Length: 582
Ligand code: GLY
Image (cartoon, rainbow, N blue to C red; front, side, top):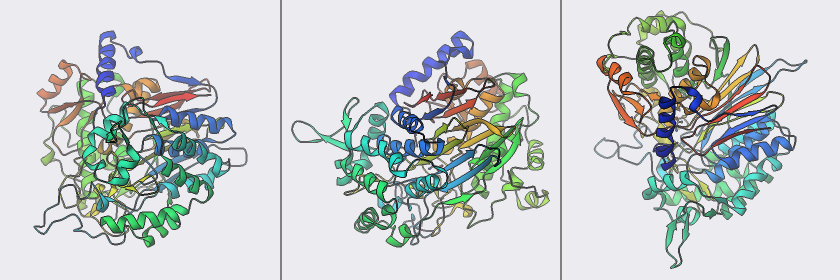
């Protein structure tokens, strides 16, 4: 998950914004990709090309998405990989004999069986800094390999080994290191360089034999990872029961981690009913808990009902005020009510209901920003008063010629995850345990707080914000979008959707346009540098808003179907990804 602005972000975003405001028109953004048949939008040109090659070989969107995710695991391991987990929303186009269906796969990491509520507390009862984030104790049971295999088994078309091949080739033959790699390494250098196997995987030797970081333009080969991927091409269960599993367990034992052979053997991804609901003329489908993404996205959209965003215009202070106040409420509810539904009752239907939004809207003052301390999560009485409603309700998106679509977000959590590479495997392990609330009210790496609903418990899934989204119109694919960015994922996906649907932006403009983010706590709204003009900011400050201006965040991808039957794609200029089609 990207936390810092890379050099490219710092350079590109102001240029985009300057162009935008200079020209006074969204036409200043670069043109989106357009193609008649299929489209892939991923965080790396290598992954986009792998997806297209798989489609060329007769694969469908599921094959292509799996191939792309495996390639991301090789070229962007700091964002996502085999040692992490994720979610996928899959739209299977209807045929004469079969109606269209949208499914959601949860291959998120799970807490090891030995995890306890006070795992990250010291003898003084306080959270030990870094323990849930760096090193062996931060590692949860990985789900990526089982998840990708399940996706492929359920809906893929090509043989599994062909889908794994692009990743094997890139791991073996190497890829050219880019700015994102260099920036992420620099940011997490202290953790990454702690472990010998991680240094061996992710550092090179200079002419004097010293270990030094890779630089932009270097070719990075990962022979251990290539061997692991080759093993997985033959038998994906080897990650959970074979050579790789054994290596993970040995590394956990020697480093004080909790993941055991039983944890790995017992890991299974879960197909969940996606969270789907109508919005405008679309049907939106995204992840239910254990992601908070779907609930929070729908909550904000419902809170915005009745606000004439289009009429007000993009970044009008009245619209932004409502947006921020709605985010504030949704993230307050997230902190209190969201967690793994196997361990806590999550009031999904209530929080996403129009009735709840109507109730909370009355508390929004159009002239004044609320203090977050005065905005409480829904209380039991409010939840009980709501009539129950039906709940039928390094991101990458791929759409194929039949209009099957995959929206897949996966992660190792923080940059370079736990920093632990399992010796002999090339597999970098996640630090997803940091997505639990280590103690009530103590913020995690993304500044998110939580309580009992998201406490550490054995076998529990840490609460996520990942929000892979698929929208259909009249039952046909319309849009696939998503983003990395920890707590900001939900608001990035939200604004991408609003940009396309309410502000008539194309997919490229929608992901490039400057964004804001509010998450209840901290109090202030995050704004992208130069993304908002002084007058707009000033108008909001007069209403009591405070702002933290930062570099860009997120790395959104967007694909949509156009009225003429072709596809359009956009990749966030804050990253190095690309959308390309056929
Ligand atoms: N690791 C960030 C998330 O899942 O939201």
